[in-house]
Image 1: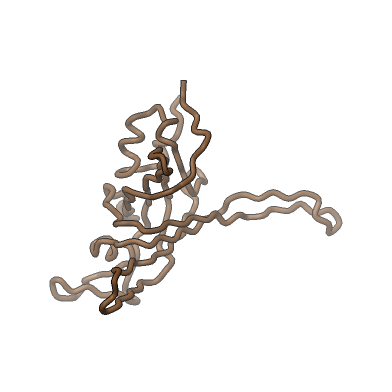
Image 2: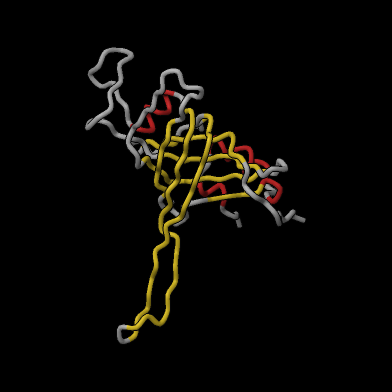
Amino acid sequence: MVNVVEDFSSYEIKESSIQFIDKATNTQSTGTKFGCVGSYEFEAEPKVVQRKCEGVVTDEISKPDTGTAKISAHIPPFVVRDLFGFHNNGLKTGVYAYGRNSQAKPFVFTAKVFDMYGNAKLIALPNASITSGYAENIENGGEEVSETEVEFSAKPDVYGEILYQAFVDEVEDAQLIEDWLTKFEPIMAKQTP
């Protein structure tokens, strides 16, 4: 019998991973550590559909359409380059540029979220892309190294989903838990007949 998690309050996020998608070859990279995440926010943006009769709203439903995630983290340079589209085309070895020729890669974002008792929930945004521009904040003599803040959109995947989550204690498929953070694909979450 499957355990049912009845109480879970998100407390911390760890083991975040990013899996870049190459649209040209339709391949997905193995998950790379996203960085040391300080904060994570996610908000779904609903699409409201109304039925009107003679100009009066008689029925209304709200369906998740897209989502927005905001993350503050210490992100490794090689992840920043792919995330924002830094390139070195025509540049000397070791030199990267960011500007009009930059092309950010779409990606899958996954992470493990814990409550204050150590219970875990897995999250995945299967079709994400960066929506913020590159920004850097440096404070000489500061007591804390500032984190990089990024914002990205979560769009529907091939199944129309923008977010997947799974409480580890409820999942019976051990392979799904093992692969979630390094090679998440929406098909993994589907029930097989």
